[in-house]
Every structure is written in structure tokens, then in C-alpha cells.
Image (cartoon, rainbow, N blue to C red; front, side, top):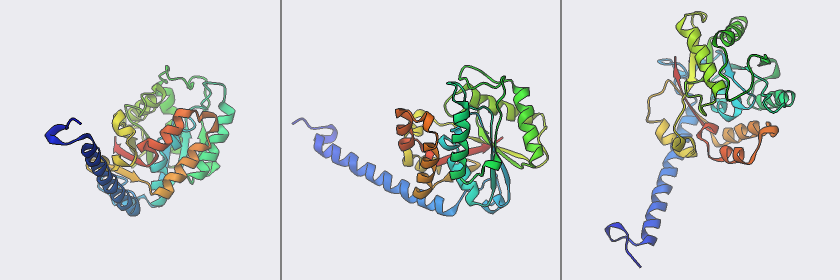
Length: 266
């Protein structure tokens, strides 16, 4: 049997790799318990996690299922820290004519994430279609979002970053609209915007191992779920039965977004 590099045989190399993986997983799980037990790490830059108590948070999403698929750690983490999250979904997710079904699924999912139906709003406007090829009009979208912020005295907004996590044009449109409101100083005084960090494909699907990376890199907010909360996030995602194709089951098992959110301030 041929020896591998440095005289290692295949069996020895396999054993070494298994040992390294075990050590990495063990370290990631310890970090996960540490950060999950400690709550959110500085929900706002330079402020203690306790400042989230009583915060009026608006999660701005593009489609029903975004709140569970991408933002569950943020919603659960802020809720755990004492904030009051609400969800503004900017389309009914009607790409396959399932809009009414998806609205109901959204309410069920949000309920499991601790957001009552009274705090869930869906914008179903013909000029904001669920379509990965359509970039939504920035000023129209900004008008809807700003109206909701002002009407509900929101002081923290959470949405996608410029990469939109998956590159979806509708996701990126939300970032563009919030960036416009922020740069034009149209947001109410004291209202901050956190955007969800898009990561590369490798990090996106290394599950709990991404805790090791996320804890080392600079962020303005980091939310890490406990194992029990991760199951809660998966149950919320399972409410979106109309969307549960085979690849989404794989996503729920391996995506870091089901347990880790790192965010930056605009």
C-alpha cells in the first residue's frame, strides 16, 4: 500500500483528518454554547446587549420564508434579549401563484419565532413582484418601508446586505432602499439599520463550524442559537410547506443561517 505525504498511509491520514474534524467540531460547539448562553453580542455597535431590551425592531424581508431561512437567529436572539420584533414582508411570494398560501405560512412561522400575527405585515403590490429577475423600484419600496417605520416607532431595522445572501434581486432591492433612506437621512432620529452579512458558499454550508469563523471576524452584531433554538428555527422553516423542496431540507441541515447571523451597521 502506497504511503501518503510524510510517510503516512491512507488509513493514518483518514484517522488524522477525523481527529482534526472532531477537534474543530468540539471547539465550535463550545463557542456556540458560550455565545448562545451569553445572548447577542452587542446588538448595536458599542452598546451592551441589554440595550436591546424594549427595542422596537423591524425585520424587512422580500418573501415569506426569508424570516426563517435567513433571519431566525436574529429574531430569536433579539427576542431573547428583550426586543420586540415585527416583520414587514415586501411581497406575498406569488411567483408560482401561491401568495395566499404563503401568507398563512408566514404567520405560522412568525408565531413559532415569537412574532404575533398582529406584528406581521405583507405588502402585496403589483410593482413589487416576487421575481428573481426584477429589481424593485427603490423610491417606491423606500416609501412603503419608511411609512411602516414611522407608524410603528421603529428604532432598529434589520434586512439583507448588498449581496442579499443568495444574490436574489428582490433581496438586494431591500438593501438598496434602506441604504437610500439612510444616506438621504430620511430615517427617524435614532433609528439604526443592521444588514445581514452574505458569506461565501463554503462558509454558508459548514453549519456549526462557521461559529469558529464568525467569532473571529469583526461584526456589529452576532447571534448564535442554542441547539434547542436551532430546532425552533427549523420548525418555523417547516411551516413553509409549499416551499419545502428536497434542497431546502439539505439547507436546513447544513446552512449556517439556521443557527448563526452576523450583521453590520449601515
